[in-house]
Length: 215
Ligand code: ADP
Ligand code: ZN
Image 1 (cartoon, rainbow, N blue to C red):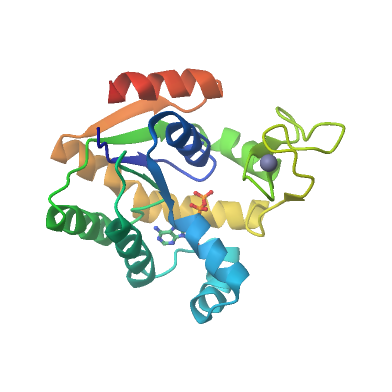
Image 2: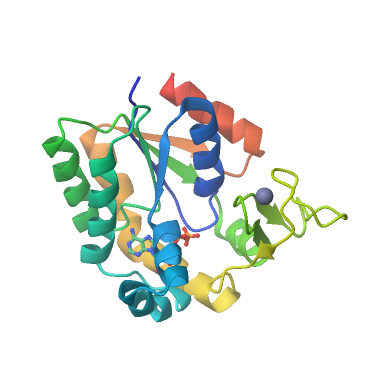
């Protein structure tokens, strides 16, 4: 079955973590524009160089760039459907996604808003690191990197912290979220496909709430 969903919520809400679960369980394809932009940076491409400073400062890159990235991935198709993670982030991106899906004869099945409070976001993000090989997410307080230094998921031994996971960039990312992305909650409510989950719960509990929505 093909299911296309958006995970919507502020930085640190747990969108990436839940997207990874959905990939494992339902064979969906995760489209994270943040990951794509970080890959572009790592590859040293012109576009990657152009967006590096914008991302480090916690600002949004242009609609044109991220819409282009998404368009390319949609063309590759996915039998299980797509999980949009960190996209759309502006009303223009939301309109563009609607047009792209229409053009493919596809639709959005659900937009899942992950609700969390701002204090929790700051502490989650400033304590965050990920496995350099598989992307498993760790947290200094709640899920520390194992004492043997090996990733529990893949055994990798390199862990990374994102350049924008510091308090200043995070405050800017939150401001961008409230100014430009949070209007999408109303947008999708009006379209009739908004659902909300409590993003403060345990990972498994959030996963169960999402499963219930997707049926
Ligand atoms: P988070 O949700 O934790 O802030 P992401 O990995 O989704 O992180 O995004 C990191 C950065 O990448 C953003 O702060 C922004 O600079 C850029 N970015 C990612 N997705 C988009 C998008 N859809 N539109 C504009 N900029 C984006
Ligand atoms: Zn790993």
